[in-house]
Length: 312
Image (cartoon, rainbow, N blue to C red; front, side, top):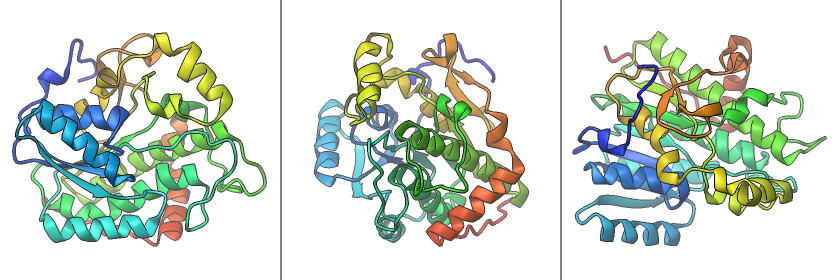
């Protein structure tokens, strides 16, 4: 399962009767992921911060895919109260969740911004919101037959560090440094979740992926000048489309032979583009001491404590 040359969205198995949540589903990689899953019959819940944009995206997809099973639900991942409300409302309407795709992200605001709970907004949106979301939906995932959590990281996690002594940038804020920190946090979380689920004997699989270099509004609308200049302009001709960039996520979410803890990325040169394959997770992402420290900090910041339940 290390290399799936030529794997495309056409290889996705039938997803009928499977319920999937995709965060950040109204544009970019999230929209491409939603489209591919809907085409294969999945019931996809578009978890979006802007409900109007989410409904517009769902209308476009329904026009493309008549009969697509789509729901639009609002969640602001930077706001833990919003995350809790989303989970409460989802639980009221669904008895199980088959796949959770932690995709939404914020990239490199030029000045330090804080979430409603006082956390640096990239760390809050990219990591803490998804940590809380996963923990609060774990019981619904445990109720499914082949449940998976797929967390989208980045190759940038390999050059990142966790600023445990200044996690929110109170003393020093660097737009890309704190973005990279959030992507390393995603990787650490995905691996720690895998380790803890395995120890509990759970059927839930935790996988990680990254999209390579993909043209999305994360780069093109980034307010950070150099990020937008390089990745939203000068280097844009080298980028792959969102449909291609979504393949590692789709592979992790649907391929039968994947195992928990795998990190899926593009198989081409420097992992910039190409068909999905297993790629290397940075050693620091699997470091047990850092992983436990981040987990404890995330529980403290979110007040979400995981109830791991063995399901056989």
